[in-house]
Length: 413
Ligand SMILES: Cc1ncc(COP(=O)(O)O)c(C=O)c1O
Image (cartoon, rainbow, N blue to C red; front, side, top):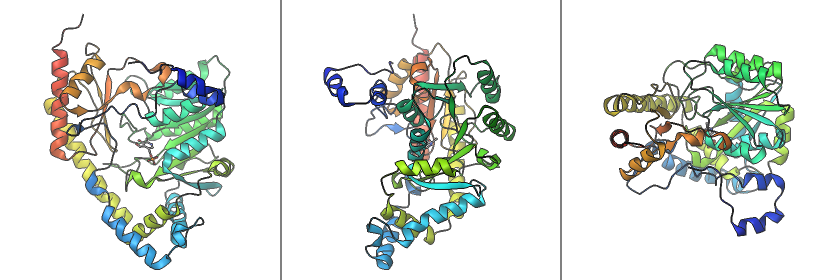
């Protein structure tokens, strides 16, 4: 499957108004093309959505009604209300208590954590800048990086024989080009898509290398709260000198449609990001969210979510063990939403996708988790255990196993 979009005349004509950065970005696939079209009855193992029953729709309706009772029109005005503005303090307090915000750091509320990443790129990257990522990594982060620079380097993070810090050190010491390295983007816990967790020692090594080679670590903490065992503190807790920006979100623990996220990090950086954030936030949603948080014990909610997702992860692991052919490999998840499957070279990725689609199950093919220019011919794929009901998830895994078997049964020339 080609990653580079074909040219068309209308597109070419309208390019005359675009700056070079936009022209460059248009060479890449349409954002979100990793999510293949799906039939209504298909089993969705592709989307990283929270389980529908955990989304507090009715509680938000009650919170909205209460908010209007106590604050009238104020959350609906540009400057927001005491309740909407207090969401920032609620986040700041949690960040300070978890040592994810130093005294010298600032906090910026964003429309989901992805906006924080975009703003950070806007104030740090030029077209010559290098961004280092794990390979594979979160595809939407790649879409953002590609909007700013073509120098996106993905270092393998799922090689059993070599540690990521060894790869990074080799890259840093042996590179020959002189483009400045600006960002190292990391999912340290339950990484999307591999579910991998970096050891404490690895986290320490990342900070040491950032200080030695003078680049910024962007730690994406989207799944940090969804651990199934003992969590390892984020890299940000090791940051004594302002080399780490931490991205947080309520998308996975309350609902992605809220678009409530934030970034913490060195004040000059966050101040610059704030200059480009001209959307005035979202006072209505912030107000309802804060009101909702007043009405619950958020830590108790997290405990419950961890239990539910732990059970689902266990079930997915059991189903995989039961149904998959022996040469399909994966690691039992330790948290988060995802399982990364590796399969042998003799299975053609496109054949597998066709078979899975014909059997009514979706997943995200591995190639989308690598920089577009360097997408390897991956025999890998991501499934998500967070969204479907347990029986449908089990059935989805059974169908995927059947797709593997049928593809293995197809002789390739
Ligand atoms: C690693 C990672 N970061 C960030 C996000 C998106 O977060 P938000 O909804 O807060 O923009 C996701 C969502 O799938 C994710 O997997």
